[in-house]
Image (cartoon, one colour):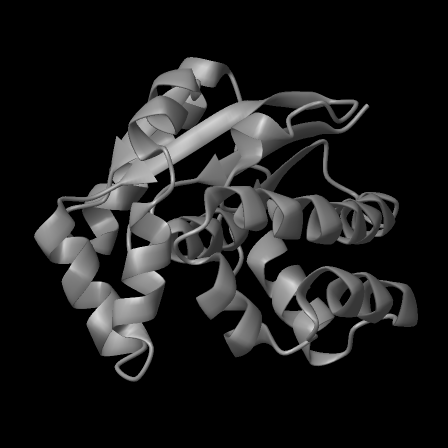
Length: 194
């Protein structure tokens, strides 16, 4: 049976960097946020229909602005998108060869009911570092992304996660933390990629 670990944390914390590091160590990983981006770019007809029915639009920017200050509408959007993400995750899991895999996403602790689910690894960084990363990566949309992320219950998600890594330094520091975490969990590094 495949053992699945979720990776989550606030925007700019280094989730993608952590997933990349794990992939370089030889683990297989999936970025669920990229699955969502793919859904926005090429929505299946059934998703498009649900978005139009609920929000009067299937435009990502328009919907983001509508849900930014409305937790109920945001929850509704997530309830529409998540089944499609789980379908993609199930397809991906059918193709993996590793015994331990990692899935990066925004809110895994709420959806951790998959067969083989082991837990959630929370990655965090001080707010100033996270904001700097967001602004350097997405200068045009940084404020909107930061605003949306700030509305999520990060303290609660961190507390319900199984482990936490602090990504406030450089890649060698993060790698040392990851290797220590893998050792503590009894997870063997498969084979480093070159």
